[in-house]
Structure formats: C-alpha cells, structure tokens
Figure 1 (spheres, each protein chain N blue to C red):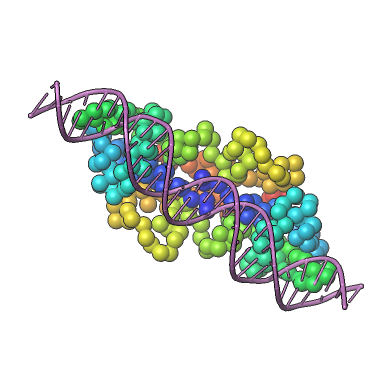
Figure 2: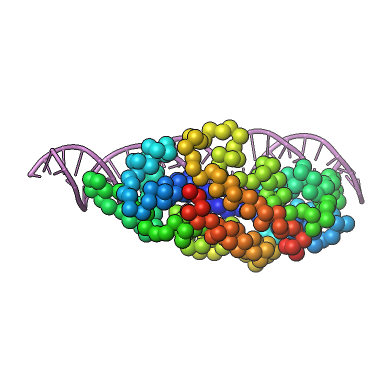
Length: 135
Length: 135
DNA sequence: ATAAAGCGGACTTAATTGGTCGGATTTCAA
DNA sequence: TTGAAATCCGACCAATTAAGTCCGCTTTAT
C-alpha cells in the first residue's frame, strides 16, 4: 500500500514529543501512550528499538524512562524509518530489500534501474526532513 | 514496509513493455507473462484494471489483446500506482487514505502536517517519472 | 464449432501488521 | 528490604492485506 506502518508513525510521534520536551527531560512510555492515545505495549516495543538504535537513552527502574539523545536537526525521518524497519536502507522494490535474492523475475526485470532511481529521489526527500522540522 | 506491491511492479513492467512494442502493436497477457516470467492470472487482473482505467485498449476474442493508448511521455508512474491501488491519490499516512476516518489518534496526532508535506514531495518524484523514462 | 483471447468474481494461502501477554530485570524510595 | 514503577524481551494471537489460483463466462477470428 506504500504506507508507513503504525510502528513508524508511533516512532515519529514519540521522537517529536521527546524533541519538544527538551533533551534534559526524561519521558516514559506511559506518558506518551496516554498523551497521544497510543497502544502502550506496541509503543513500548518501538521505544525499545529506538533505544537500541541509540536515538534515545533508556533508564530502567522507578523514575526511569527515555531521554532524547541528539540534536533534533540531525535526526532524519529516513533514519527513524530504517531503524524501525530494521534495514539499513529503504527500498520500494522488493528484490532490493530482501537479502535472500529470491526474485523470480530477476534476469528479465526491466524496471529495476528506473525504480532504483526513484528510490534515490525518495530517499533524498526523507533525508531532507528532520525531527526538528516536525515540531 | 513502504514498498510497491507486486501488482504495481507487474503493471509497470507491462506498461513499459507495451510502450516499447509501439502503440500500433497488439500484445497479449500471455506474451508478457511468458516474456517476464510473471504469474499469468495475476497479471491478467492487472491488465484488466489498466484497461478499465483506460491506459490501454482491450480487444477480446482470438487475436485479441491490448494496445498502449497514450504517449508514454504523458503516463506517469504515479498514475499507474493510483490506478492499481484504486485510490485517486497516494498517501503514506493511513488516516489520509482511508475514507472511513477511523483513526484513533486523530485529534492528538502531531505528525500529520509534516507527513503531508513529505507526501507532496514524494508525489512530485513519482509524477516526474513517465513510462517513457523507463524504456 | 472451436480455440484463443479478455472479463470478473470467488476463493485460498501466505505474509505482514498490529496488538497483547507474561515474565524478567532494574531501580528508586518508603 | 520490600513493593511499585519502569524498561526489556520473547512468544503469541488476531486481523488485515497481498499474492496467487480457479472457474465459468463472453467475445471474436478462423
């Protein structure tokens, strides 16, 4: 459907929220879930991935939570997407994104080159918007 | 996953094929399926949609098939995508694309405006490439 | 009349997504 | 030192979507 997944939407909402909260403030998953009416468990997962990918720092225990880690201007939408997708680079074409290389048309595919071109342009667009520009 | 569906890939392959065949030539689904090793039945569906949307003209019966209908330069990748998706305009965000308007975050959503902006840029990219540029 | 083509709906299966659950660990503070 | 609040993590389930298949129909050239 060529759409962003819920996880990515939630990640963007969370990242934006933390960016406006300021980098000093600690924020909990519950806070964000309540504030934006997001499913807690799923958001929790998303936060964990964001922490693992070092976009935010995590603190366990009571009074724990997350803290925004970087300059919002340097974190791009494309970074968030690839972090959540778990893939280093995005791809609108399937044969480029799976490493298994099981594309049945492979040799006969005529659209790969132009689509890779499209991909490049789209990447540029996604790299051009930072979290900062979402506040 | 932010990827084009198989149907869209097949549609692009088919459209490109017909564009290079020249607008006089009649082409059958079988030909294309064989040539590019695509699943016949699924491709057939795609061709039917393309015909319904008047990108190609269809001819039934023996010696029937399809003929490319327009100048390849005027048919954009974005046109094909929306035709196959069955939606007039693409949208990377779900709340914009479904008419049911059942978005649970709705009022609290903070990322809509920036994402609509992204969408606009992506649309431009997709409108900027025509079938002609894929040959 | 028959074969080759498109048309179209119903169906099945596979994959992905969205969401949930249970339990573990960490840590603060009463 | 115990309990509550938080992250962490894997497993699981349900719903939706994507991909593919099947069947019977219509159209039309030969």
